[in-house]
Amino acid sequence: MNSNVQGMEWHAKTLRAWQLAILRFAVTLDNADRLAVFRIAGEIDRLDPRQHGNPDFSFFRTTSAELCAAILRPGEPGSAVLRQYLARIDDDRLKRVFAAAIEADRPAVVPIRRPVKRVNDLWKGLSSRRNH
Image (cartoon, rainbow, N blue to C red):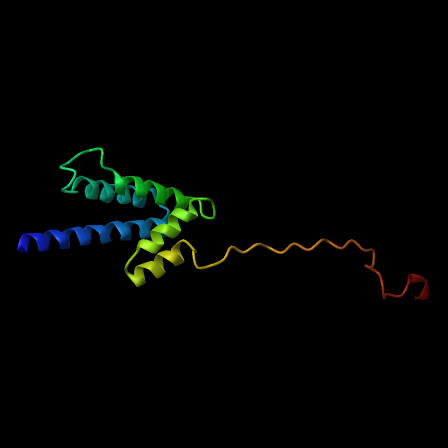
């Protein structure tokens, strides 16, 4: 029983490390941080006891690839992937920080464009040269 509890703690810590690595990548967009996400994801995929080391199991690696691609292209169809991942985060602090990192809590700001008014009223209100 004790080794089972330790194994569960180890899995929880590894999962948290993966989530934090994704957060770090979302903040830095650095390739080294992206590679760290994949390293941890590969480690988690290899350790699933139901797969017995089956190299075909790749849930975390696939999810990591989708998340990293969506982080690099915000506002595109990948944002659904980010919202789904955000909904799965259990820790409220981590959820808020990740939402801020991907700017999920801010609506997309569309600049207001007003038509340029081309009126020749530049000299309106000024006295003519003839009056001086």
